[in-house]
Length: 307
Length: 279
Image 1 (cartoon, chains in turn blue, brown):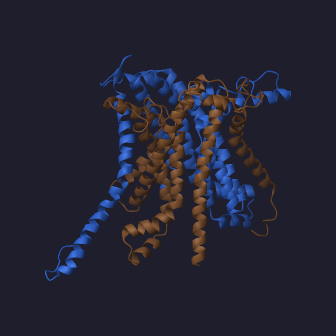
Image 2: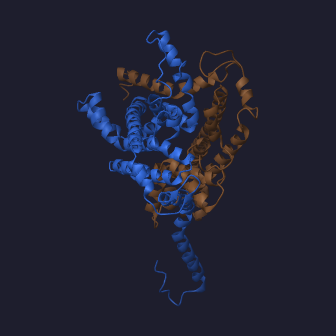
Image 3: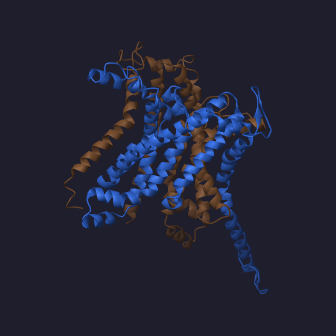
């Protein structure tokens, strides 16, 4: 960066490329800002400012017609003193915990099979794609597609009845907490499979060989070698699953048929009643809860190293 | 490895069976509604099939039956394509930026990660409120576009990060040593190497936007996108026309995914042939 102290004898011929060099080095310095600009601007306008807006509006006042700029704490007061809020949080956390445990078990098993038991790379890629394709299709359609399975006259009920296991159709299958968790697992298992598979593929196979040569059983290899090394993938998958479930409202609304609640659904209902300040206060608290959960999980892993 | 590759243990078959069940779990329901969408005109939402017909598909295209299906489909495609182009462009550019240290790079990275973590209903609510307060009209090509980008850009950025981490800078140095300008290096060396992964970023951009519901809810304005239209149908349509729509959009998604994968495959094959010829 020390371009000064140019000898006065410098010929005009060498001065031209030098000033070009200065321009280039300036360009080199501002280039990252220009390149990151569009991303930064988009996230600023459509993420950061909207969230700050939510925070601001959470202190506003409202009646049944409109919202007023103000600084009141009543939205938070009403939210945090209502037993409904606490019950709903408990329910949401229950959904998140159940979904997390089930997707973790499925994700780990599927990833382990793909990474360590499928030996040809081509097959690995094909089967991995088979697992990921549903991720790129419509979530709402995937939820609807459970109706013929779980409905009162659905496949499961008629199957169980014809097998003689039950004589009345089970009512709890569709429009229940069971259906909600089932749909969550169906939608989000992928978010576990992919990062865990990614972590497992980086495990040095020599470590597994060494453990086996040292006399470890297959189960010991999984528990003492593969599981610890797959932790970063598990953490990333867990962050995805937990945050998606904590913020969900559409799955709970569709699959429980309005009989169960989640925080996201509570916010969505407040929005549809135009109680924006109440929805905003609720959203701020939800964001804080989710961030605390994520920070706790991030203590286990530095994502930046995992790419 | 070669000694044991002929024999598969019991654990392999158990795991393979588990994997098979998982795939059935993933695809079974959608296969079922595909079959049920061919219900006869008298058929209902569950089995048994009451004859086989295209009645519900025909029903879908009658304007008054299910709202504005054609219009919402067109809007979703236009929006998806816009999101795709912007996601590829913005995340590639940002990827170049992140190869060097710059002021605020850490903050920007965490903002992008936060974008993945923030519940989508908050993005929807926030943008909706912001537009409301500023007196702007929310539109699917304005506020909804921005809302979708907050979901697709972090995915794009993470993929681009992953590519650059595996990218060998020796190629660029070689190009520079041979006298290429920075632009020529990017155009003829870096971009061709990145192209297959950029197609992947494009796939994320298009399909995530095409299917996005929660972020569109408060940001789409007066015209529905397809997922909003489908959601509206779930509350007031109780005939297999719902399945017909599901079958069609899933078929469309599969076609798009197929096209992207075929694109990547063709690129790979062409590259293999070229490097093979050079060797």
